[in-house]
Every structure is written in C-alpha cells, then in structure tokens.
Image 1: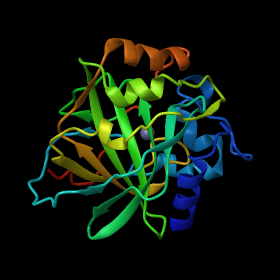
Image 2: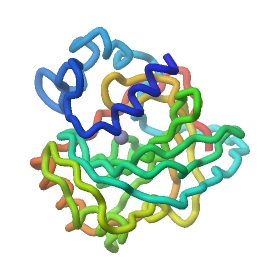
Image 3: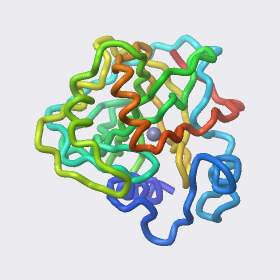
Image 4: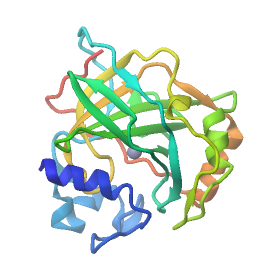
Length: 243
Ligand SMILES: [Zn+2]
C-alpha cells in the first residue's frame, strides 16, 4: 500500500499522460469519475470510503500544530499530462507534519476547486503533493479566488505546456508563491483525487485562499480544452474534519 502510494507519487512526476498500461480515465462520460473504480482493478480504491475531495464542514476543534514549511528550491519543469498542468520541483523542499518530514514532489491545479469549504466551490485549487521516506503522502491544498494575478503562476504560465508537453523552467518558481500568508488549515484523511485514488493521504487544506487573475484561470482552462478537471466531492462517512 505504502509502496503503491510512492509509486503513484513518482508516476505523477512522469511526463507521460497514460503511462504504462494503466487504463485511460477522464472527467466525463464512460471514463468519468462515476466509473473510475470499474475501469480497472488497479482503480478499485476509487470506490473506497475515505476518498477525496470532500465538502469540508462540521469541523471538530483540534489543536493543530503549525505545518513547518521548508521550501527553498523551486520548480524544475512544467508539464501538461492532459489531466492537469503540473510543476515538478527540485529535491529538498519539505514540510514537517506529525514530526514527520514530507518532501514536496510537485504541485498542480484543478478548475474549479475539488474540495468545498462549507459547501463553497472556488474557481481553482492548487495541490502540493508530498511524500515521506516510507511513501506516505501529504497534500497541501490551496483555494484560489479571482483577484490580483499571482506572480508564481504568471512565471509558470509563461511557459504553459500544450497537452503531452514537458518544458524545462527557465525562471525561478517557488512553491512559496502559491501559499497564503496565513497558514492555518483544516485537516482530514483522504485519498488521491485521481485514479488509482489511493487512500491514507493526509489532507491539509489552507483556510486562507490566494488569488489569481481571471486571465490566469482562463489560461489554464484553455490548455485543458475548457474541460473542468475536478472530481466531485465524495462521502465523508466516519471521518472527522479537524480545524
Ligand atoms: Zn490534485
């Protein structure tokens, strides 16, 4: 299970859209989210009871320790795998959660947001995907509202790849640029929001959104052929959502 999650984290780094012999999936029609679990035995977890995204509500008060961010490096390349636009980062950027160090592997985006907060959808959501040395995953999610342009996105989108393309980044793109200034967060246990939907993922959702301009969100949608890339919210079931 842990090894599977690590393999997935690493495969997310791959520039190939449909790597190996994993079946094709999408966000609508026969290969859409309702059918992911049936597309392949590998995707069975998509029918699990601890899936992401969710509508975050009914919070339980908890003394959540601040996440310690050690982001000093930045993006190495940007790719468009047909499901999202993703920035792969250089090794060495980490967060510490539960006294465990997780290394940032990549960050990518969804339009509109996948998670909801008190039922509210946001125009975009960023996911910063981290793995610890055992392959456990932690995702920091950042909601994006429409407003001032985001500088990190501007630098990344300046080299926006077409579908199937991977481009080496020529300018410095720090993941700090897509974090809000106040880093209070909600927390729940969930899964990858794309097949194989592996569970056991620590979800850390920033309470404070960042902004991006309407044009920046539009630019993302343009290279996604104007298809939304958000999995619908899943049942919360027995999971507590902490704040
Ligand atoms: Zn994501």
